[in-house]
Image (cartoon, rainbow, N blue to C red; front, side, top):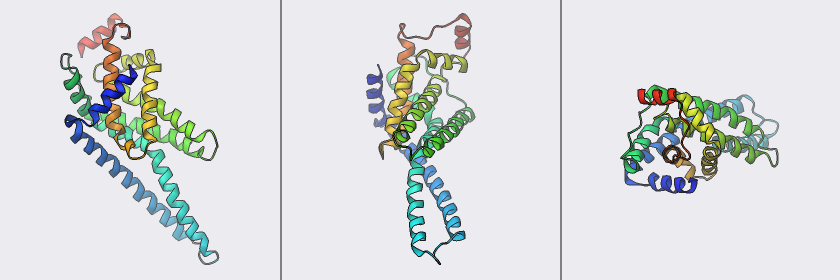
Length: 243
């Protein structure tokens, strides 16, 4: 199931129907990263200007500038999942509508999340992702733990965020959580795919669109197959019908 979902999402990402959204997503991701870069470089410049070592040890200023630049690069790498979360919240409904129309036209379409709610979810997961990745960043110099911690943390966070955004178009929040927990292994494996994608330079820029498309497919497969469908209680069915 997961392999089929990944292949379907990969095809969707570069399809004509999603190409415009993909470029918008890449543009927004790069713009947010650029804003972070500018802000951090300004802070570093202020710090270095106020703590210049050039008078006594000229070479230390050069070394500090080099280390600061390297630190910025590493920092942006660890910030990418948080930025991805924000971008995904912004474009999720656009991607979901295309995927549902192209592949599941016989089904009732999902209900778009209110714009404010979608952004709130993106910011919430972005803040959580930022906090977790800052901890992973502190483990950068601990051999055998750094990349592993980064991968494991983001596999969980990205699986949770993207799946809840996709499933939230059809289910009440409590049902979305129950669905995710009932299929935690499959959902986490999908998150691992996204965490692996984040590690690949350039390709990691497509994470928001690819993740959204993949989770739409995964949610559909989990709920269409009777053997994998969420166990619905009477009140669950009533809440879904009410929506």
